[in-house]
Image 1 (cartoon, rainbow, N blue to C red):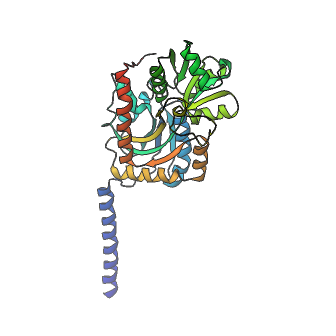
Image 2 (cartoon, one colour):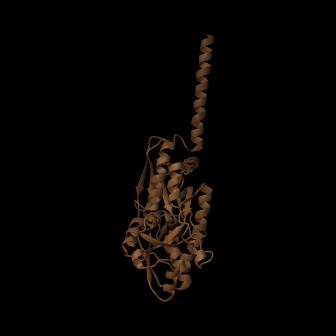
Image 3 (tube, rainbow, N blue to C red):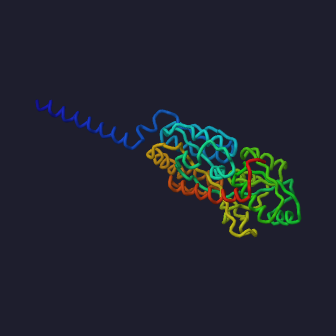
Length: 330
């Protein structure tokens, strides 16, 4: 009888522990996440660009930490809108995320028919980091430094520059420079970094503005001529390239950035768990080395940090778009 009582007590305790764990899973909103279901990361720009590269670099340590298969899917077009819309339509179950770039905060200001609300339809996860953008010249252009470009522009010479799309921060930064001095600079939008790089290397366009992540390899091998960086201080990776601010445009600062979003209503516990995993991945030696080589300064900001950051970016660049009547057309 004594053994029977002990056995009953033992199994009762196991049941209570199980019940307690079940209750925690339900109240935490995380359940058994992640289960055997594949986690999808949408890269909102084409393969080969900075968004794609960052998503694929992070996927490697995330798979190990979460013990779950992760795929990166490129859904590009319309300056990131098509991929972002796909995220907004996804189930908020913790198995779909997206890596977005600065265009996310600008698109609402000049695209009239977005199918999503930039704030309400997403749960911010992590502000990955920021990086200088670099203005480079084609070797065929004959431009060897920023001072020469400014002098030629003041003399009435016309120049064209490429960016990863209308409304990208690269586009707006160059538009701000042109407006400040009244330069006649024409904008040529591209659908991501690879075709932009291809044309500036080939001399089809004279100038290109893009993140250090996509420009630096071609600067290092002598394919393009670096003119200036857009951050308030020089890049560690490009210490000999001056800033726009020190080149006569005091106070100019326009870093590009990358972040991870989830669909709205994704359980907060999953958002926090993914943020923690991403933060851990951002300390991985392989990730640190690759991001440093691309000029990316890691932030690892949490959900609240990212929400505030996006709001500030929308206010700064949205105002510029509206005041200068920048439209969603070439």
